[in-house]
Image (cartoon, rainbow, N blue to C red):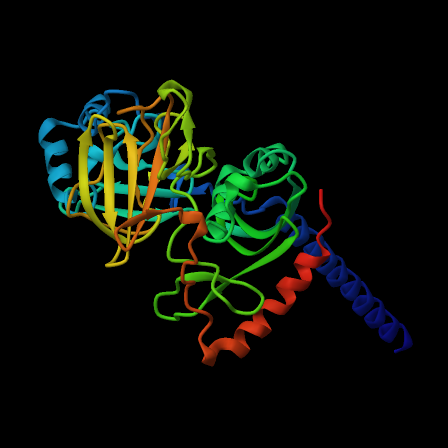
Amino acid sequence: MKRLIKILFLSLLITAIIFSFYYLFGLVFNSSEKEVYIVEKENIEFGFNLDNFKVDRDTIQFGDSFGEIMLRNKLSYSQIYNIVQSIKDSFDVRWLTAGKPFTILSSKDSLVTPQYFIYQPNPLNYVVIDFSNFDSIMAYNKKKPFKIVNKTTSGIISNSLSETMDENGLPWELINQLSDVYAWTIDFTRIQKGDSFKIIYNERYIEDTILVGIKNIDAAYFNHNGEELYAFNFVTDSLKQTPEFYDQNGNSLQRTFLKSPVRFSNISSRYNLKRRIAYYGNKVRPHKGTDFAAPTGTPIMATADGRVEKSAYTRANGYYVKIKHNNTYSTQYLHMQKNGRVKKGQYVKQGDVIGRIGMTGNTSGPHVCYRFWKNNRQVDPFKQKLPPGKPVPSELKVNFDIYKVPLEESLNQINFQ
């Protein structure tokens, strides 16, 4: 009996050992299985798994058309015509620009049939033309996924704002945005050595490393000739979501007129009613305009909203544009290039390009002569007290004060480069 119990005990022990062995072996086997069968990341771009297609990438060449490109990729004339007609209300294939990249996704079978044409007008945006099913051809616009990176920078003016920011490796888009922020309050032609700035701004990146532009400036600080000028980007209209810049007291930085019709230009001659010219025997020849010198082709902007009163030519003025802003103010822009000017009767907004720097009329170099009328009399625009924009609405003043405090503290903590 004792022997029988011993045999039974040994049998159970051996069985337990065997099950334990298989259990442990199963764990090891399953563990190794998990390590071997790792799911690889899909090759996703433009919303497609590129592993499912034959992918051809190229660049629009000068003289290329959508039709020629698709003919080279084995589509027939009738197929191309159907595509163009089907998408004409959503995308005009004539918008394809030389130098811009495109991608064609084709089937991976023996026919290698094109199914999608993807055009990239810029690194962030792209257009997909879907003709994978010729019964439902469509075109749609998309954006690549991007992330926003908050950054800060600063600088001390050594010569000009643009040169200093360029020397600091800052993108031109940021330079232009900063000049737009202070376009109403700072005469950039009078920037002095030692003036300084600080900026808090946001950059867009795709694929983590590719910069695709400046999203916006959150706040800025400019010390100009000893005067401290803060600027805070604050949205007052929740429907329009249009940001405006205000100082630390909630006053708008905008004015009725821009300080200059040209970005980053030099004033070569100011308004001067007692100007003498040697060519005319040193006689007084009043100069009732302000000359902004800049390279030929530089855009000229309307300094305020208004309607084009004249877009014409005279022997002295060359090609010029005159804008009536209201019953009090008018402005005039002389010596423009012939082409690209706005037309008489056209309504323009502040900052709109109305022409380009030229050398037409009586001029010895490329510039725009900017003339300013108040109550039908030409005056010096820099000596006019122009009305400011509207301040932060009273009902939003508390919100603004809460919003600007951390930004102001961040600006104050930035060290100058």
